[in-house]
Image (cartoon, rainbow, N blue to C red):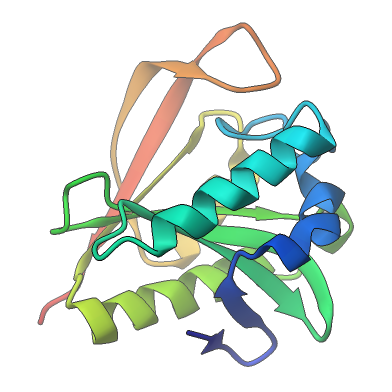
Length: 174
């Protein structure tokens, strides 16, 4: 499986992507508003990749993790979570901080939504972000998503503080 956009190539996360994933997953500043990142060690990054590879081998995975390539360089990751709810997909993204502000997160998310609409018939997508993550909120709006609510209880990996999370969604007509 490979998804291509105008500038990016999106492929399932693999062990061979380890060094590229470490480039964003171990960077606390890069991932400070993320729930699953930053990872605490290179070993933890390896565990994350191995778990993602195993999940994608299931007949109906609960989530998919992808590497985002710009040319031959991994610049981030995107994901699609189902967690047993196959009527909607939850998007996630992280882009290496030296590539922020270039539209890569939105481009990768559009590619992922297009793929899951065409191949799996998913027409409802959601995304969530820390209430202070204005960059991700901007991406959601550019994707055409609408604000669907806010709730407390978010725990970012790099903080013990309980945060507010924003929820956005988009539903496509079949």
